[in-house]
Figure: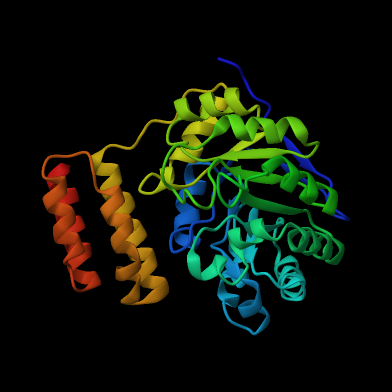
Length: 331
């Protein structure tokens, strides 16, 4: 197996950053909160993680500040991903994130959600490359830390010009691009086009991170071989598997692969995650934890029935009791 260098260097405008792990954990709305990131770090302490997407305009008005305030409590590199279509709002938000301790600023130009794209943010910027370049130029000149972009191959198959768009962002000052191998039109359907990512990588001088359909160490190795990317970003593959980033990193470093947790450890993870979310958010923590418990509690007899009982639990106490009882039965 080919061993891959674990180092990516970003010079920035005034503050340089060295990334020691070539496997990134994608920002996932409603998922990659501080509790989830803490679990990912258990297996991948050096990995670059991201906050959930932050609305730049809302942040400038004082909303969503909790996502930024949490940066000081991180035990490893943490980037802030911003979305908006207003350069001034993105500049102001980037400055706030930098002051709070962001490792780097990532601008989202790929989110396919209609309510975001319709207003010109996220993947909406794929239709307005001049504005996308203006945003990157403005933000890179406003902060000292590196500015990166997460984007897609294009708005739709007929209009996609990923190389042209990526070169524009590079010329505007972006220091790294993460390319999801689908168009906005595809959403998350179909197969990620790793060959198209390779073409972007070959055209650029800055690092390129490949994203899309990487759900195992085997996928990661194949993706890197196909794209020649500088690293990979794990998205939906980590749902219910916060160890996946660490597993892939261990393989790319040439170490023994981290073992996939068995049923008992999965239950322990679900229990820990639930308890932490309840401690942070009160009873609302149960609502947040439900999807995680549904993703994580697998791999044992009766798992489907057990997950249904967890989803129907109406109080944190009831869900915790179910998890503790199942843990005892597995032990």
